[in-house]
Image 1 (cartoon, rainbow, N blue to C red):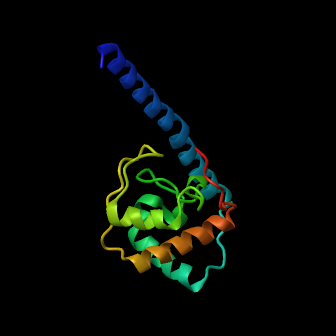
Image 2 (cartoon, helix red, strand yellow):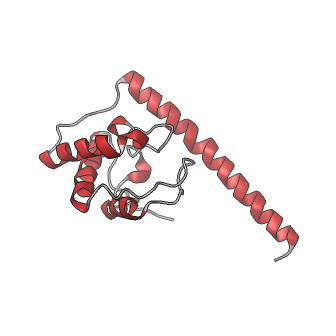
Length: 145
């Protein structure tokens, strides 16, 4: 590979990272602030499984993903269309807790694995997230690349 090609790859990579920071971080911050200030977050009547999931989420996930999954400065909002079931299926949450996740949508860094959360707990968390998403207009959309 020529030095010019390497330079182009580096420049494209840096521009991609800059774009991601420019696009996602301000949205996440302003969206979170708007939801908190306007009270526009809809909290549904959760099913029994989702209520269990909310407790487990608050104990293990909220530190980074925020109360009611609206995100923090340490982790992205799961109450975002990127996490609709057509793009991130239920099993992606299980894989994330079992193996961790490399940074790919957001500039927060890699998510470490969460071995303290077992499979049944993950699916309770997913039920909580899905019910919260649906109450806020996030539904299945087929992912297209």
